[in-house]
Each structure stands twice: as C-alpha cells, then as structure tokens.
Image (tube, rainbow, N blue to C red; front, side):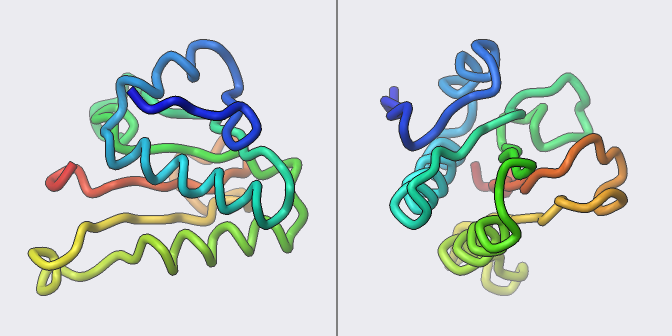
Length: 131
C-alpha cells in the first residue's frame, strides 16, 4: 500500500482516508502526483473530498474517480492544477488508446459544470477499461 504524506494529500474525513487503499493503483498514483505537484508549486496541501460512491453510473463506484476540493484555492491555483493534470495525464482518443493510458480531468468549479453538481471541485478519473 502506498503511504500518503499528510502534507501532500489530506482527506476530508477518515472514511475517505480509508477508501484510498481501495481505489485503483493508477488512481492512487494520479492523486499523489497531483498532491506532490500542488504542494511543491504552491506550498499547500491538496484535499481529497470524494473517492467511492454507491452509484454504479459513477466512476467513483468503480474505484476510478477522485474529487479535489477547490473552495480554498485561488483562481490561479485551481487553474494551475487543471493545467498540470491535463498536461501530465493526457486523454487520448480510441485510436491512441493502445499506446497510452487514458485519464480524464474535469474542471467543476462552477455550478452546472456537471449533472449532479454539489460543490466546486476538480474531478479526475482513470479509464475504467484500463484500470
């Protein structure tokens, strides 16, 4: 199991912390890369708010989705995190799928940016077919 340094990643509660060891190893690496970049760029800890859910239509249900809290971030920090994740974890079309691992990053900091929007966050996921 991957050890999560508290200064790199924090979890909104103990339940979310315990879920970290249950998610896909690629998602764990994605979370740690995001946290490490954010900490060494801005000197702040990134907070994970959501990992597992009961809804089978959600990537969170299949252990492949994560939400990062953004309400405490500046616009620059949020934009920087999205830009870093899209650069470091690109998403390729099916024609490239065999050559690359696929990730998806959605900037959901504004209401209405997702179907069941509840709070501002940045969503990341690994492709469930390749997890």
